[in-house]
Length: 373
Image 1 (cartoon, rainbow, N blue to C red):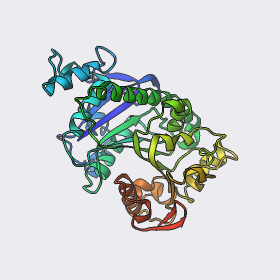
Image 2: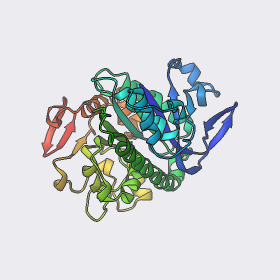
Image 3: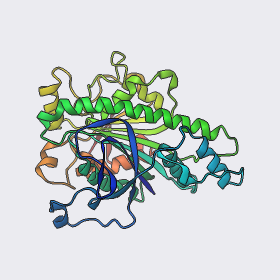
Image 4: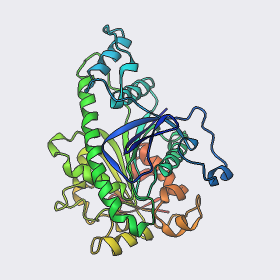
C-alpha cells in the first residue's frame, strides 16, 4: 500500500520538517509527499475537537526530494539492476519526485497478481491542507481497507482551495482549480513519459494493474482545465474508470462546443457521472455564480448519445445519508460518496469493473442511465 500527496501548495518549514502550507497560494508545479500509516490510529472524537489536531497529528507524511536529473533513465537503471539485467551505482535512494513515486508504485503493483490498483482523487472547493489530510484518512478507510475494492494505492491531488464560506470563495477556488489543472496536465505527461522510458526496455514487463480517477465537486473543474490543454493526438487510454461526483461544471461539457470532457472517453475505459437533483451546493453554484449554466452533477449531461459505449449516468437523488447525519450532509446532498453507504458500495463496484447493468440496487432508466435506490 502506498498513499502519496501531490500538491502545488506552498512549502514551509514546520518543526524542522518540510510541510505543505494551509495558505491559499499555489506554486507552478506539484511537490510529492508519501504518507506514513505505520503508526496511524483512528482518532477519537475528543482528539478531533482539539485545536492542536492539525498537520502531522492528523497524518504523518514526508516530502520526497527533488530528482537529481530529470527523466526516468535512472529509474530504468535501478530496476534493471534489481532484476540483474545490468549494473549501476544507482539505488532507489537516488530517485526523487515522480521518479521515486512511479518506482515505488511499479514495484508494489508488479509484485502481486491480485488487484493493486491506483486511485487518483481530486478534491473540491473550500479545503485547507488539514482538511485534505482528514480526507486522505477517510479515503483509505473507504477504498484501501475495503476488501471488495481493488484499490491499494491513492494519489491525492492537493490544490489550495479557500477556507472560508462558499459564496465568498467560489471565484478564488475557480481560479485556483484552473491553475492547478495545468500542474495536473504536466503530471499526466510525466506519467506517459515514464511508461515510454521504462517499457521501451523489452525485459521489463507492465504490472497489468489499473488506474482510476475520482473528481469531486470543483475538482471536476481542475480535470476540465487539464483536458482543455491536452492535445487529442497525445491521448492514450491509460485510465480504467473515471468517476465524476457532484461535478461543478456545465451540463454541456460533453458537447462539441465545450471541447473538454469529450476527451474523457479517449482517456478512460468508462466514465460514471453521479447526479443528485437535490444537491443544494450545486444549486447555489448555478444560481449565484453560473447563471444559465446548470451543473453536471445536479441534472446530468445534456447529451451523451455519442459516448453511450463509455459514459454512464447514475442518479443517486433517492439514496439515504445513513453514514453522516449532520446538517451539512443531510441537507447539502453534495457529499454522497461520504454520507451514503449505497453510493459508496456503487462506486466500489464501478472501480472493480462490474458490468454497469449488473451492479446491485440500480434500476435501468435508459441506455447507460440508472437510478440508485
